[in-house]
Figure 1: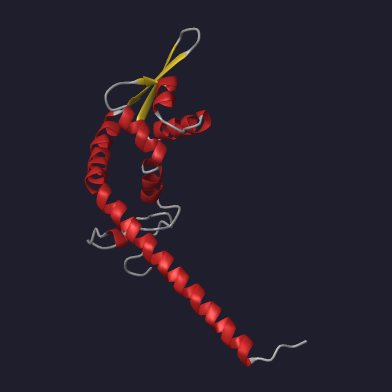
Figure 2: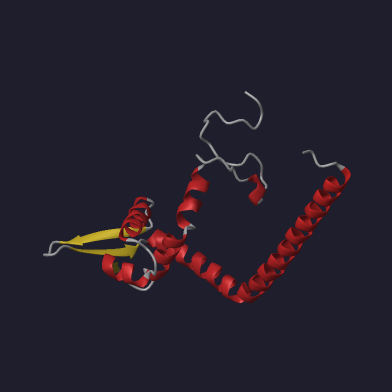
Length: 164
């Protein structure tokens, strides 16, 4: 076996000491990537943020998260529960009442999410300006490409005799 090769095909750890993000395994079956995909989706982030202060019922979560469907919220909560970030408690009442809360591990994730939100709030104007500048450049490049194509077509029509 070669140096730096792991016996386990599913092992996604990095082989060096460098923790640079470029060293992360990008394969779809990598555990780190799967976890990041799960916790970084827009519904999971909102659920974790809402559950920071107190437990909430499904209907409270659904009302608080604009645009989420019942099916998507159910899937998100199940995935977060499976990953150990959210706990689910069913109360034996009629109708049944289900409360969701962050687990201790989920609570540790909330501080990371809060830092991401703070960063986003601090940089939202700069990001908006960058997007506007990019859109202007892209539109100008598209217009220039269309003009060049039209000029090439005109030259081609002038040089090549029309075939009738």
